[in-house]
Image (cartoon, rainbow, N blue to C red):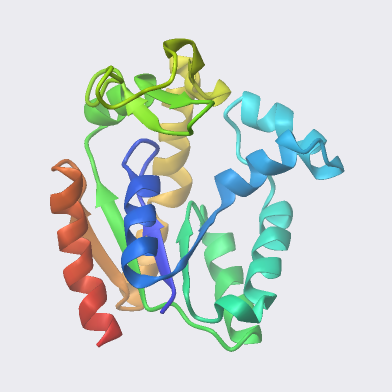
Length: 217
């Protein structure tokens, strides 16, 4: 099965995508991660993407579609993908349908993690990444302690695009304007499932697991 995971910035898409990958043996396709890898590797594409990420802006549909095409063309992961952060707008959603048909694949369902704005802001503003062990923490909800984090605190860092509250607000507004309408698109295709994204991580995943198990039966 192929799955799309929706939710505004800070909704926990990455965490739940990782849980789904482990439980259902899927490959996570995170456009955000792929784009940041391009920047870190100093590729030509990365040089174009870097200033956009630093401003909290989205890259062009053309760049995203190029990356997605490479993923769908890889037969090793045929119909075993979960898309985190894609599609971001109606044009990408419609083009995605075309690409899926081209490679004889389909979407099994679209999951939407629903979280209120206040919670989202705290999740993003408090997010910290250990640059050494790669563990992720949040100073408001799940702070790093001597018990759960063995690395020196100096390795705790924030992503560049998490620093500015104006950038955070801009990303949220972009989601409402461009991405939220896509939910209606997938609802019309009878593929959309709403998930309460405010609860405990394990509770959220259990709700997701029940839905996906029924699809994979």
